Amino acid sequence: MLLKDKVFIITGASSGIGAAAADLFARNGAAVVLGARRERELATVADRIVASGGRAVPLPGDVTEAGYAEALVARAQSEFGGLDGAFNNAGRLGSGRMVAETPPEEWAEVLATNLTSACLTARAQLPALVARGGGSLIFTGSFIGHTATLPGMGCYAASKAGLVGLVQAIAVEYGAQGVRANALLPGGTMTAMAGDAATNPDAATFIAGLHALKRIARPEEIAKAALFLASDMASFVTGTAMLADGGNSICKV
Image (cartoon, rainbow, N blue to C red; front, side):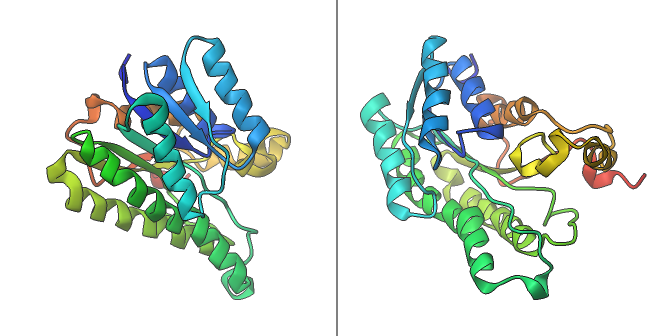
């Protein structure tokens, strides 16, 4: 019960890493406020947690809207009495076009979802954490834009690189008030963002080969890394870009 009696917001919680983290955080004692755009899928995750004896409420919405970040915090306070942390996990990949072929509107959309939304959520969450005497903010980054990239990932890489800088600033500005902030950088994970890896053996083999462990992560494995950062086990960990990438960043064979 690493998060016993804690209250956490989790965005991007309707599937993949976010849904796995919602289940895991709840099993470890946290009350969770779940955010994502897909209302039906989000409700399914929340219902599953409640049916298992956990505490969860869904609040569908768009993380690129400032009012939504504030609404998630307000829901945590009204339902569970406050906020102890957040796993800001929502993100988007982009179309995979090369930089010179990327429309300006796509650049704006990817940065709005992956980077600007992180600032919006932090602005809403930080006062609530300070009021509780501190807490933990986790943001989903990527090895892409940090240790490596792939063709067609210009927007995504830029947004995730900027996220690390934002995390460092939050860590420095709010550390004395008990707030820890970290970026979690997954490798290839079997989610919808992995494309056709779930159904195409050739794609799965290629992606797995990029990792030292020669496999793709399960969402639950990345959720465990998020749980570590959320819990007191990481009480002296802040301002980091923590890789959970199966050795992707160091694998050349």
